[in-house]
Length: 470
Figure 1 (tube, rainbow, N blue to C red):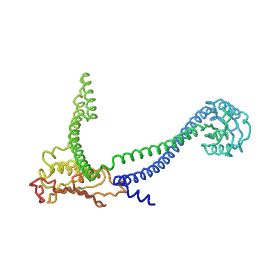
Figure 2: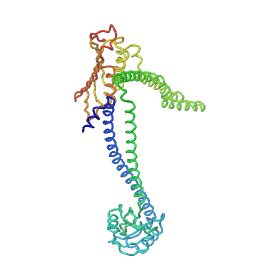
Figure 3: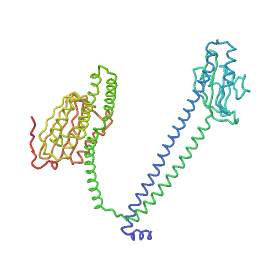
């Protein structure tokens, strides 16, 4: 007891820090190891079950194909024959007895009383009544096959001696019934290879879990050595520095995204390939008609001309969506009005814009953020709200700038829309990045979106009263 107290008292500050850092690490890695092992085993068992099910389904599909071949081979005999046509039955049994495949593949036939009529690989069974036959595990064999045949057909799994080795192996049989002749016709595929494959996969799973434990232990040891060697060099100042660098990096990413949008807007002029291909085909058709001297050349050129007009409009629309020129040249208010007009023309939803003159009142980042929020909000209104009217308002005040977008649609709830979507997260993150706020309220009477920017994004000399355009 005294020695332990001396040991505790003699620990240096660095050693205490080391123990404080390593004990949670060891506990965390141990917990992670147990969780990973449990999850890995559960996932592997699911994968093995799925693999076994898939392999069995493949075997069953193969059996159905074999039975289709057998049915087609005797259909020309069975179709016109009567229930007591013994000659037709003999011809059918001869054909089925000759249809073997592989080392262990064959067709068998039982009448509904259980008498074996065809067994080419085990001829000693022919003529015997096997209605009460069971396999080595006590599972009935013939009786379930006949019951399935009476009901139209199906699968039955049991154990049966392999003709090639005489060893009992699991087999899946598929039978169909010839109701006029009271016959059960079937074939089977041995699935011992499936069981062996599943066993191999299970062994591999256990080996992977064991390797995972080894790797986790090795990683834990490496980290412990790293903690001991570094001695807690990271301090609060470095964390603050890292946070500031992260903020700068985030800002740079936002700027890069906007620059990329502008670049893509220029490059999209060459991407309207579908329309241009249609125009090309129209021009080639016109060229052929010119060579042949056709009279309807003007009508033929009409479609390519319309396609060119459509391509030009589409390029301009995409360019405006990516980075509207009005936002940079005229300011936020004209850009929002242009966006609303295009939205109303495209969707048929009445859109009213009520905004102040904010051309030089907001920073570039502030204008861009509000415009992107409006763009995303109108897209959501068009897709989901079933609204007939949208009102967009922008005001400037002493504490910053605010924008509200209100519709009279059906609203939404997380249960109907699956929770917060990507578009809503993008809008919220844009405003939070600039120090603003973003709120959504929705009911059956409509949805209201509020986005606000702090005063630091107001340019010097910006108006602080609510001046509205006519």
